[in-house]
Image (cartoon, rainbow, N blue to C red; front, side, top):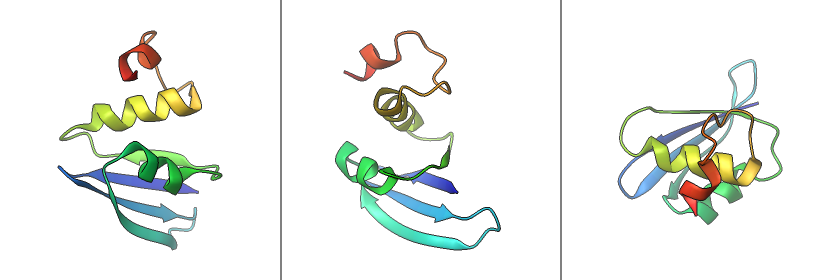
Length: 81
């Protein structure tokens, strides 16, 4: 499963796809931690995100909540808090 997150100034377009490319879920959610986490909760997904405006916010949110090996910064959790 793959989750694609496109960050805007106030909203995030979130798409969940299976490996065969079929879209399972597509939402426009508020750019708030609880909304993003609710979308991803309980899903075993690889997360991809745009590398444009404010991607750091999602990167740190992901690292802090899943303590992911994808987080390469030693200060990841401290930076988010």
